[in-house]
Image (cartoon, rainbow, N blue to C red; front, top):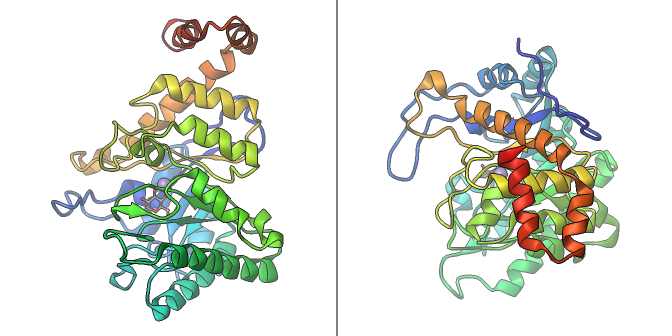
Length: 346
Ligand code: GLC
Ligand code: MN
């Protein structure tokens, strides 16, 4: 069994994580599987073998019924559940969203699924439950009343937060994962700023339970700077979870290996996480490409881990005093050159 990969001088939780869906069978909107789907529980030892400490899963991947077996298996492997997440996007009933559906019966079902997922999060021993905004949005203007949708989100999150607080105190926290589009043309909670605003509208006593899970690709699809999104979360004390990957420009969501497209910006991101003493574990949300053969399905994780470990050590070596000096002297292009030297040169 591979030993878990740890980051040097990482404050708080160490060890890396990834989703069981990261090593999927390779379907895309234009074609079906290119690999036999691997049973979900068989994926845990594969993730452990990559050196990961944490796994993540949707409620449709590791169901409430499977959770006790998953918890036992993870313990045997020395793994933990890093986060659990209800799937509000796959089932046809949620085709127009769950919390923001126009149909009250669908909203009620979404709420019930969310509460069930809170209980399963507890069974799996995870501290974080993620809400991704998958189908919460619209394809046509006026398809929904946007002001009502926002109120429904507030109401839904308040209900979930109240349930968790009553039953689990502050043991389970919620991380909202923004995305601007795909699968919907326009998604509510499109970016970090929108999610922070939503949290500010929740019941005061529930707000501490809610934070963010920003994903690299989701910010870059929107043309936003991921580092700034992370800095905003840090400033608000809301960086509860993190999904690292890479994205090749503003196009469909690629979930490429971390470090592949913008290594210099990724280096800067790690400098910021180190200086902020980010205490959460670092998780990847990558996708084994459709062209990769079954025997190489974990390459996407190996490459992400390798890039992260290299960049993390390079980030530790970045001279913070030099950054300060460049800022003072207003030598901002030279500052970028210094970062490039740390990346490519030293
Ligand atoms: C989906 C999204 C992913 C998100 C996950 C958790 O798989 O593609 O980005 O992290 O759901 O809800
Ligand atoms: Mn993600």
